[in-house]
Length: 196
Image (cartoon, rainbow, N blue to C red; front, side, top):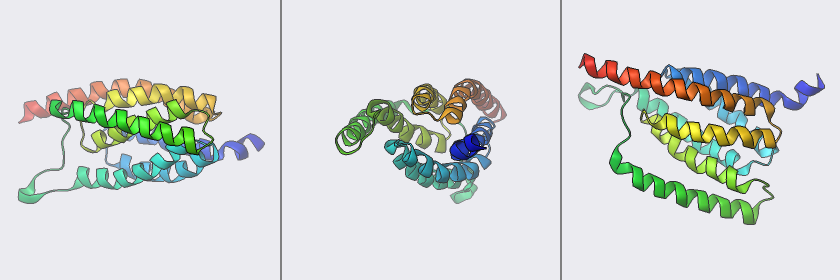
């Protein structure tokens, strides 16, 4: 009981995270609703563990969850259907790489100079990459899976280091699911293209 009392936030957010990735794999809109609950609790968990960039990132995730939900279900003018799975535009690759580098450096400097973070490089890296990842997910870009694979690998190691074992194990599972998710979404694109 003492172990559960000590790790209950980690356990609950892990269960929600598992539901989240399964819904993402299926390209289900329920992902956004589960994500909202997971991120709300994540704010508390990460603050308690001194993962300040992750904690701050959860506020961005909450906003992007609302945006992503709207983007996935909204029917626009002229009965335009909600966003479909598609490829990341090549013209956005360089600008977004620049944004990732700038955000990574900025967050690293903040964590290094204004907090007691013991993992500023990894924490700022996963945060910077996640900013693009959640945006790409909201737009249903296939390549968002590659972003999450990189985030998940680094986060897995980071969370084991910070003694958040359940979430760390979840991120290890995320890597596997993300690989399968990429292939599933790719197949969905091909099926969708054939039907038009």
